[in-house]
Amino acid sequence: MTVGAMTGRPPVAGAERLAQPFAESGAGFFEGVLKQAIDTTNGAQSEARAAVDAFLRGENEEIHQVTLAVQKAELTFEMFMQTRNKLMQAYQEVMRTQL
Image (cartoon, rainbow, N blue to C red; front, side):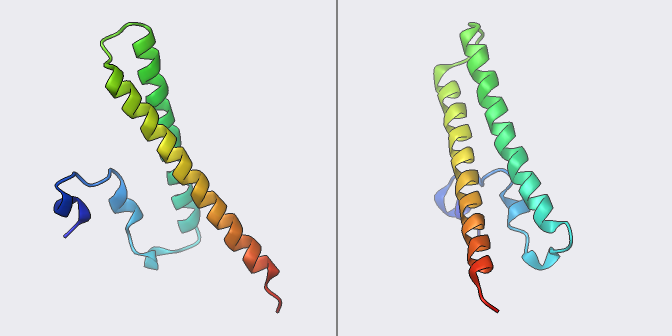
């Protein structure tokens, strides 16, 4: 049972790919996950930019859709930055470890 099924909300797009077990880890696994996170962040920002541009040109774009697209991009970027911060903290902790 997924959380989306319990709350009645649809599952988050792309969550299945990120929820795959870490047993698949290989030489390029971390690189692939990082690239996917960057692509997702860039995609959300591009969608928000396109929605704002369409609204400003007077096209048939609703203000609530524009606001949602901008908020989605903002949250995606914030999550990416927090993940980066945690990775940097982990790296610094490993570098401080004395052998």
